[in-house]
Length: 350
Image (cartoon, rainbow, N blue to C red; front, side, top):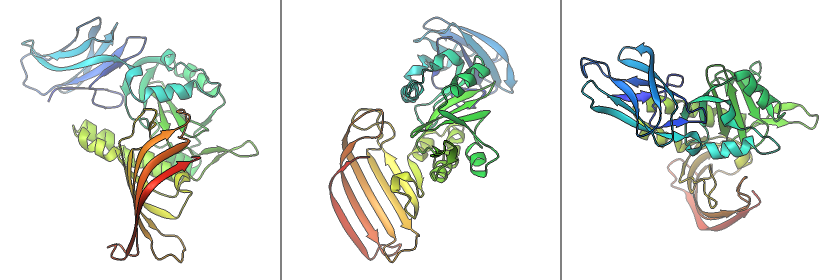
């Protein structure tokens, strides 16, 4: 199967995202025996140039793209001019992860135009937790812009938790001390920006940065549990990757008041719209086991929540939510002894 992918991230590329530099870089993977001549990459339906850089391996060629325009297409053709694969060119601001990232980079007094630091986009995701990967024009200047805000803390790899949290970071990591939290990784070859739902860098009353109790939820949910998704996409299994994206391990964290529970949840139907902000699921199923010291023998709990509408400031968590909730608590794994409840709820003050 002939397809495009990014050399730096190994991510399959189905859309060529560009910034104001109008540059791109892409790898074409093509099986042997298509024709006597290797496939060629060109720009169609608009402005742009494609130049072969080097062979990146067997049945693989790398291409540099310049002067691209939104609305153009990147096309690979064989020796008989048959189209093997074609992808559209779009602005990276159209990726769904961009708007929340841009709002964070221009909030709290920060004024960072990400486009000013991008040489070319490597990979842009619609998922907030993946964000945008790019080759920086100047890594030192991007680092200075981030650190000068004084809102970011440098990952401390000498700390065991910090080292684990930074284990998937390429280059130097910087975390915004806020919730949700921007996570910026800076390297000469590839930099990235994404949003972590569970922030764990806190500022103590003495003005020192400390690691908060949400670090475990962040490591297991947003780091370790997400690692297979990129591999699944590379293996042409994007559907399985999207299914995995909806599943989350549940540990004691700030959203459940650090209760002594462990389990799994499935979140469906998140929307960046006003009624259901990005990251807030419309339908949530959660199954947990309470392992803490308690006289309550009903340790198994299963909940289904349907969020109908929410209101308040769209830049933060909703001030109120209207929804339906069904709950089953069980005394054993088979749930032979159970209690059930269902009803309409209004939750305020999140």
